[in-house]
Structures are given as C-alpha cells and as structure tokens.
Length: 72
Image (cartoon, one colour):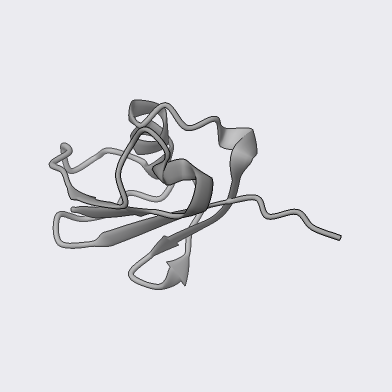
C-alpha cells in the first residue's frame, strides 16, 4: 500500500512511502504504527474517497492522511 502524508505529518516521517500490512489491518492501526495522534487527523482518504478509522485498505490502495487545518 502507498501512504501519503501531508503538511506537518511529513516532519520526521516521509511524504510518500510504500508499506506492507496484513490484509485485515485498519486505517487506525496504520495511523498508530506511524505514531500520528488520532486527534490531529483532519481527513483520511483511500483512493481519493473519505474513509473512517475502521476501514481496511487493500494492498494496492493509496492512503492519504491530512492534519486538521486551522486558520483565521
């Protein structure tokens, strides 16, 4: 699976990386593996579609993780 991290999530990690996870792995487990606090996540996309933390992406999928964005 390809994982894309955006904005502040890239700091100390990566922008794009290919990783392998067992078939039953949830997005939440992947986020935990990447040491990203759930409360800091604003958007989760798999193949361009919004997903929840309990979604189980497949081997060829692309998971994109965006932080909460604030502004004023």
